[in-house]
Length: 268
Ligand SMILES: *[C@@H]1O[C@H](CO)[C@@H](O)[C@H](O)[C@H]1NC(C)=O
Ligand SMILES: *[C@@H]1O[C@H](CO)[C@@H](O)[C@H](O)[C@H]1NC(C)=O
Ligand SMILES: *[C@@H]1O[C@H](CO)[C@@H](O)[C@H](O)[C@H]1NC(C)=O
Image 1: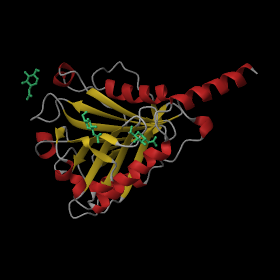
Image 2: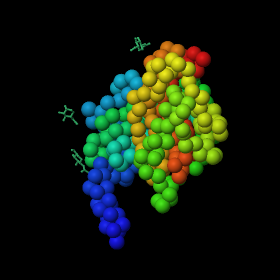
Image 3: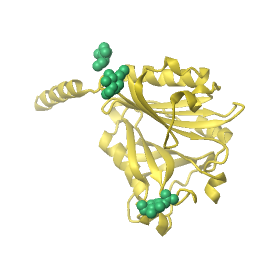
Image 4: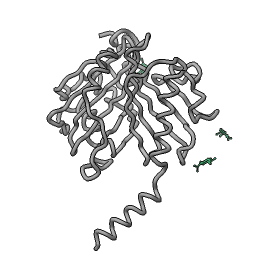
């Protein structure tokens, strides 16, 4: 009885607090994919006040990659109804100019308009970039909704993603790697997800910082946009990077990383 009451109170609270609904956010990510496919940004719910960033640089949306029509071979989206935000990965492997795009969108409080778009736009020369590899490896994975009874909380999902990023600067951090676990890094694939601790320059620069999260409990995933120091020799204080992490029963199952390089493979 107590549990029943508690459950209905929690349900009521979550309904009252819901910032925006899933259907609204799903319509927006569908529009994003359609805009990228057609090169027509006018179909997005943007306003004159929508901020657009490409690889951390502010840009007019009309000068950005979204105006380049291209065939999208694979998409994967997260819908964060608590923070009214979305994440979309788009792989264009068969396009004349191949791309892997990782896009974060923020919305007005009821989800009706996009206030900000942060686009991490990877192409030839970016870290381990190989769109065909990204596509063939991502296709093997299962990113379907997690059964309602098996879903992890936002906190568990976020903590798993944070532990993974924290471990790059501190080998003592315990990361809940699953078995199996697979990481798609650029276009390369490994089933050994464990990362070594990066050199002191990475740690001194504050590690993976300016973390921006999109969490979707239904998909059991978080994407963390961050400033990644050290790797790009031209941007030692941090280059645009993003990590998509799928968690199953508290353990990391898949990781997709995209990191932008000023020069070919970050000068390494
Ligand atoms: C844009 O921002 C300005 C200044 O805050 C505001 O007055 C205006 O209503 C906004 N327009 C739209 C379409 O959101
Ligand atoms: C959302 O808010 C905007 C402006 O605040 C309003 O014009 C619009 O009708 C609202 N949409 C919904 C679905 O409530
Ligand atoms: C990196 O940050 C340091 C400390 O804020 C600053 O002195 C330096 O100029 C920055 N380097 C680059 C390449 O932006």
